[in-house]
Image 1 (cartoon, rainbow, N blue to C red):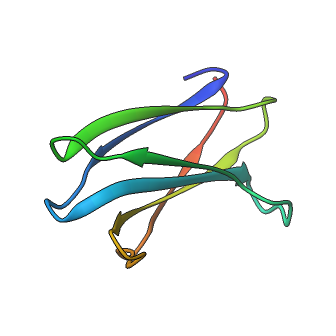
Image 2: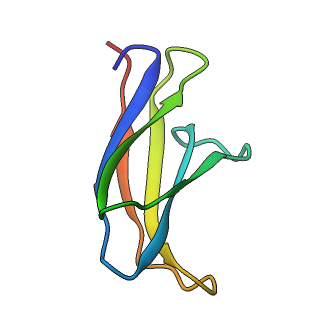
Length: 79
């Protein structure tokens, strides 16, 4: 969505949070990571994108104790 990635999620009931990591596509630089508490299993999180390069967005659900679901990946492209 222009200068930010809007990530919608539906997490399993046992999830304590959703972890979203964003970095420039094909880059080795560290990702910007945000952990969002899950309340009710669904939600959205906005991640600022500092410039108009394409970005990789990775997300997974995490349970108490650090067990994570398999991740999913999408590309965020500037408009």
